[in-house]
Length: 105
Image (cartoon, rainbow, N blue to C red; front, side, top):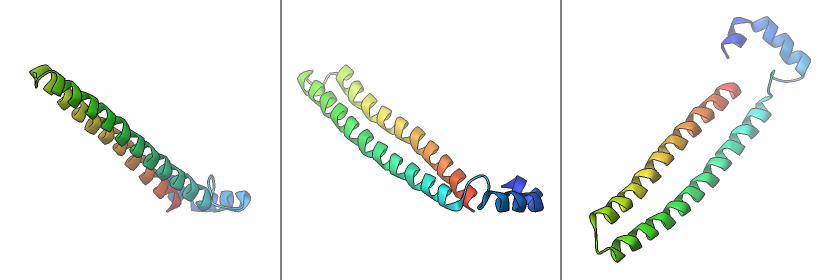
C-alpha cells in the first residue's frame, strides 16, 4: 500500500500491464478474504465441537472422582485451553483479514 502511494506512476503502469491491480486484482483479494472467513468459521465450529467433547469427558471424570481437586482442575484446564486457543486463532484471523482488506482498499 505504501509502495503504491510512493510510486503512483509506476504502480499505474504495472496495473495497466497486468490488466488489473498489481499484484492482485480486487476480485482475487475479495475471494481470498471470503475463503479466509469461510475457513475461520469452519475451524470455529470444529473447535467448539472438539471442546464440548473434552468438557463432557472432564465432567464425567469429575463425577466419577467424587469431585476431587485434581478432576476439578482438569475441567478448568479444558476451559482455559479452549479459550486460549480460540483467542490465539482469532487474533490471527483478524490480523490476516485486516491485511486482506488493506490490499483491496
